[in-house]
Length: 484
Ligand code: 6PG
Image (tube, rainbow, N blue to C red; front, side, top):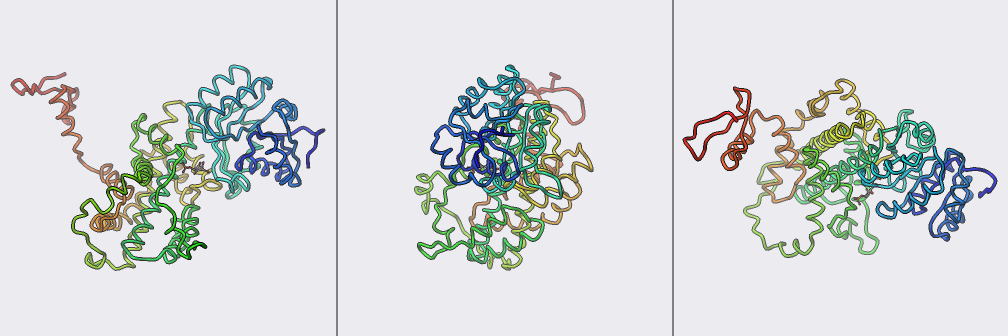
């Protein structure tokens, strides 16, 4: 019910689905919530539809909205990330007083968040970039929340956010991530991992469908079964649901009538761009982003379809692989590739945290990603354990659980990559993750040759395995070596 006397503990600006669900979630947890939308009819519709779910204070102007909040004011902006966000922040900041807190709960680019935090904190206000994961359903019933900003802002904001977050084993899926852009940075990498996770699931489906010849309904059952084991996760669960869905219009499996061109809003791409800048090989996420891009290159694909030679293709029978064995191999290849993608994502988080001096604790992320968010999964507990055992572990793949899983999966993984290649089926993340893994564990890499080539054409010098210093061979001279 609306109430104009009472002050609100929190306010939400932007009443599209995410904002309205978040406001309702706060109200369901006993908070009075001020709500505001640029288009007043949207606010009215919200109150009409949800006004009885808790205490709401609808505002028709930004000034009324700000006046409705108790101090320090806590206002969460839930508008589409981009230029519009700056306008809303600036309007809000003009009406606020020192100590008040502005939260951006959208998928903002973390460098924008760093800039905004600087501008807003100079005015004596707090600016918190908070990653919120879980989609519409999560926003309503318990998301995973990744707030950045000052420790001081978290003292006031934290309990409120924790009260609406998902809870796993008694722990809320919300914690202070680190200063300024830290929250949005980790949300960005979360989304990058989400891309890789979805892609490896897609590759597994594709192989079961077109190599093993199983029907979507049968594959749905297989995913349901996989969801009982190591792979237990939200994304595997919804995959089983999607595959079981029958299209009402045609009676066909829904998957067969959906155009195979994947969309993307940009967070996966940002993750990869940043990984490139940080020098972190997030190959799984990169291949997943490129796979979406390639799927969306519809004109090019239409031109290539049937017009590029495939070479001699095989099938499982000729390869002497039973269907049952293949299904198990695919499960293992999926899990191994997934672990690689997570290990790479955590490498990027650690590198970003170092660069910006955020002091992000990777255990916190693995903990708050266990519930609410899109990549929630049982195995995240293993990541917490890995960093507990050794906070300095060079790669998650070197933590005992991961190494053992890799050992148990490697033969299956190789067989799947070989089989898919011989069947002409694309597996960009399965294959590139295996190459990453083999590169990581390799005694020698062809990088020595690259160093030789660089020295040849550009006198870029190389290091020797047996002597300290940098060296150059006089390639266009007498080819003796000099110290650089
Ligand atoms: C989440 C999701 C969400 C994201 C969608 C769409 O954590 O709840 O990551 O924030 O916006 O998944 O992303 P794409 O459109 O880029 O696939």
